[in-house]
Image (cartoon, rainbow, N blue to C red; front, side, top):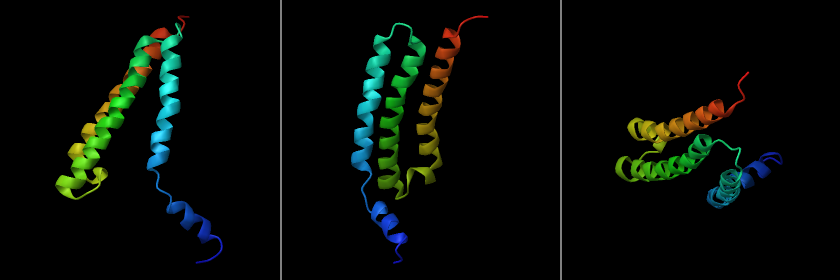
Length: 105
């Protein structure tokens, strides 16, 4: 292995699972903060909260794709599309919440 490829190989060997779990902590802190800010649009907050449901559904769908079909989630279109629908819904709620809260001109 060349000198420039060694750091990439070391980086690729790191298990990303602990980073995923750790990434939930600042997101949960953001949700807590947003729930305390009176000016934060409630519908947008619901959309951000729904993102957690998207994460949970995606994890379950990935496990089903692996166990039932022996494939990654991205390769099982019905499961992948179903999981992504939750992300679309959460994004729509965030957008609609901020649109409704914007100052009228």
